[in-house]
Image (cartoon, rainbow, N blue to C red; front, side, top):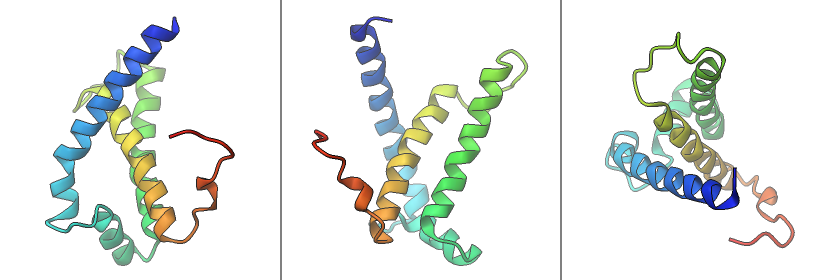
Length: 115
């Protein structure tokens, strides 16, 4: 795959991920301005850290993606697969935010990484 095509696909996926994030945010935040509200509520109820909740949500989609990749024809999808990939991109961002709040953000400095 040429760089241009890869970049076009990544741009599209990022755009779709942003739309998915914005569409799902009201249900997860339940009126709060805290984007991590859902993870905090569930974490408190389960006795685990918000980052652990976010990881479980992320792994749920990884499991679905894995099943799809292993047997594309046999897996019935309740939502388009692109949505699951986009959800996971968003969950990874949310996990980073959780870790920052949990004061575990030293990994944010990666040499000369450009934003």
